[in-house]
Image (cartoon, rainbow, N blue to C red; front, side, top):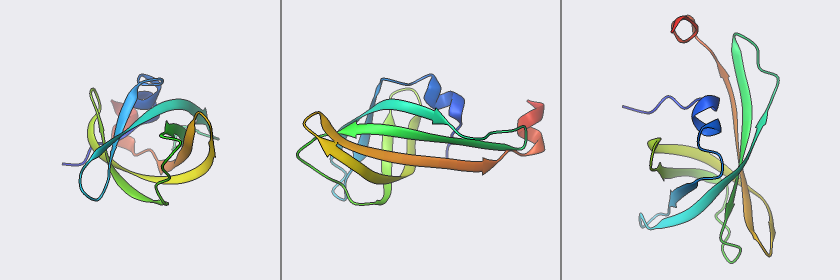
Length: 105
């Protein structure tokens, strides 16, 4: 069953290590370095995640399997947005409706 990812889950794991799995299922470390909020309201949640990976490698825009020690296994659509001596930067953007059962509990 897929994990229902929320802003709170990522806020609680800011500045921790995530693992991107390539096509051979080899793990590549990615640090969650920033979470920015969008224009969320009680019916809609918007936010963006910024990850830093290896500066010597750039993964193309795609959906990647990811792993995290406390969140578990999930998939993210990642887009490379920059690269410098500290690493390659990737962004994942969330814009989703919040359903009534989520608001209740």
